[in-house]
Length: 255
Length: 230
Image (cartoon, rainbow over the protein chains, first blue to last red):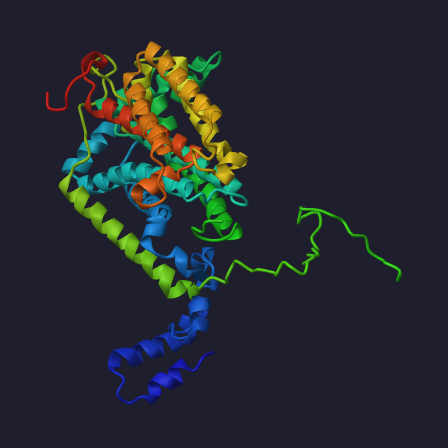
C-alpha cells in the first residue's frame, strides 16, 4: 500500500472532493477492483497497466519517439475503436432486427419511424463500417511505408492482411442485411464474381447463397456470418495481432 | 598451450550460436551506434492519447450520423434489376475491371493475386532492404524498367484498360524523372529516395483509387461513362 490516504488527509486545505476521492480510492473495495490507489506515483502508473486485463496489451513504458500523431496517425487504434463502436451499435441493432424477408426491410422502416433514435443508430453503424474499411487500408499503407513489416514482424503483417480481408467480408455480409434494392443487387454482383472461380465457382456461390439466387436462406447465412462467425474470427486475429505487436518489438518503430 | 574445453564456431546465426565472441582489432574501436531510446510511462502518455483519439472519433461519428442518413431504397425485388447494379464501393474497382476483363480475371485472379502479393511482402529480401529505385544507374536497369513498363502498357492497352494505362504511364514518367533529375534534398529528394517496392505499392494504390472513383462516380446505365453532374 502506498501512503496516499495519510498524505492527502494530512493537508487541512484539501477540498471535499479531493478528500472523498482519497477515501474512495483508499478503500478496500476500490483496491479489490483496481489493485492500486489514485494514480500518483510511477508505481501506480505501472500498476494501472499490468493489473488491468485490457490495458496490459500495452507495455508499462513506451518509446517517446512512437507517440507523436504523425508517426502512426492513430490508424490501428482508430480501427479498433471503430470495431468497438460497431460492436456496440451492432448489438443494439440486433435487438430490432429479424433476419427474414420481408421482415428485415420492415425492421429498417421501423428503425426509421418507430424506434427512438433508430435512424441515428443505423447511421452510426453504417458510417463506422465504411470508415473502418478506410482506416484499416490506410493502416496497412502506413505500416508498409514505414517498413514496419520487416523481420521479426513478418507474421504480424500476414495477420494484418487477414484482418483486412475479414474487415471487407464483415462489411460485405452486413451490406445485404437491410434487404433493400441496394443491398440485394450489390450482393448479386459480388457473389457473381465468386461464381467465376474455375470448376467450383457455382458450388461456392450455392454455398454462400444457400440456393441459386439470393433469398431468405442467403439472408440468414449472411446474418450468422456477419453477427457470429466473422466477428469471432476477427476478435481472435486481433488478439494475436496486438500481442505480436508487443512481442515483436513494440509500437511503430522503424527497425 | 592450455587445454580448451570449448569449440569456436564461426556463424552469423544468433539462434544457432547464441554466445558470441567479437574480436576487435587494434585499429577498429568498438562503436555503439544505437543509443538507448527515451521511454515514457504508458499511463498517462499513451493511454490518454488513445482516450482523446477515441472521443474525437465518436464525436465525429455522432455529428456525421446526425447530418447524413444511411441510404435505404425500395424493398429488395429480384424481378426489378436496377441499371447499373453496383457492388459495395470498396469492390467497385474490381467491378470496373470486370468491364475490361473476363470474370475469371477481374473476379478471381486479380483479388487472389493482390492478397497473395500483400502476404508475401515481408518475405522478399528486396522489400526488407528497399534500395532506392535507381540504385544502379546503368543501361541494364533502364532497359529492364523500360521493357517491363512498355510491355505492361501494351497488354493493358490491348484490353482497353485506359484508366490503368494512363495512371501507370504518368507514374512511370515520374520514375524516369527521378533518374534524369536526381536530388537529395526537399520533397523531390524524398520522391527520388523511394524504393522499387514503394513505387509498386504507390502504383497499386493509385490504380485502385482511380478505378474505384470511376466505378462510384462515372458509371451509369449499362456501365457507360457518365459525368457525376449529369
